[in-house]
Length: 262
Image (cartoon, rainbow, N blue to C red; front, side, top):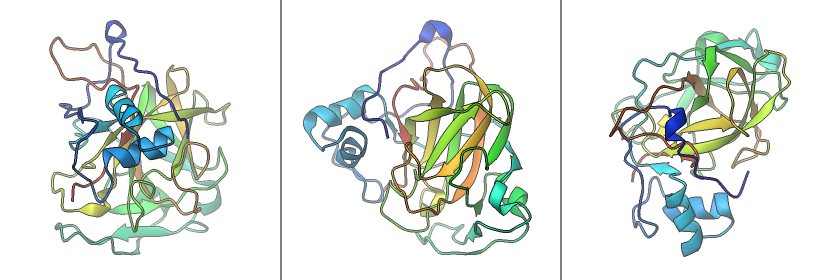
């Protein structure tokens, strides 16, 4: 995982307008989100929970205390999952709490891996550990990608960002590793009591640039957890649009990992 971030608020180039940002701006914010604090993110992304590193979390606009508003964004479509095409290999699951009880419980999911991967809902699947096995088509040339994970246990946020994303303009690569830019601490569902929703996070290719395809791997250099069993709900490509005057924007040079407030 990279340990430093540059703030890239390139307004003149246009930014992705994803939602009304509710950025965490206090390095000493006392709140926690499912046990994760500003200091937790400072430790995981910058190496230690110090005031200087908590200030980096704030300066780089890593955390947004809001849900990710999906608006008109369409889920990317899975091309293949390598090891689990045809419902073999990785587990297919369904998160069970859809009313906000706070449960992480899950059961076996119906259908095949494409049925699970091509929507953002309570169905999830697991990716391969090899770059190029699990490949999604964004459907257009995107600048950023939003990743939605399902959480089945702690620690958090490690269990919400346990996947590395690689990006390319070809479904067969070459692949460029993406970096987390922002974490939406409340996931994507309006009912913030649904804790399995995960901390939705946005990534960008190292060095920037557009891409059409994304390959996801469990673990790897971009993950906070390396236990070999990520749970992916879905992924969306995000376009670059002109930055409207006065709008709250995603300065995607921070990070994207959020989770439910507790």
